[in-house]
Image (tube, rainbow, N blue to C red):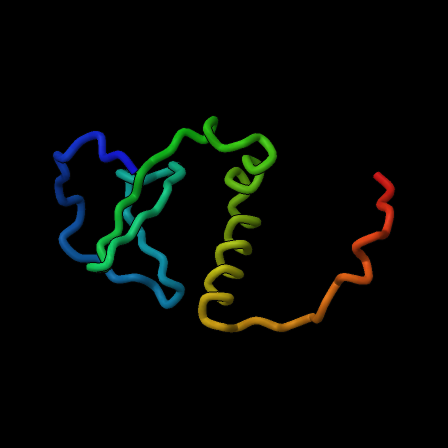
Length: 99
């Protein structure tokens, strides 16, 4: 990670997260895509990225808020251990798939 500018300033003194861990940052963060970093102190850095830098085969997800929300919820659920083991899918490994 490269921090291109050290001139940070406060945009909100204090905000609370929702039950889902969401933050509302307002106009400063409106309609942007971010990489999110954290450190051992619990500080979070949002790094805006150009959506054109996202590989084409992944870009659709970032442009679909509903699908992205489902993926992020799944990641959060997995982190909390809320998973269901469906067993092995090895039996399907050799199946030919029609395009």
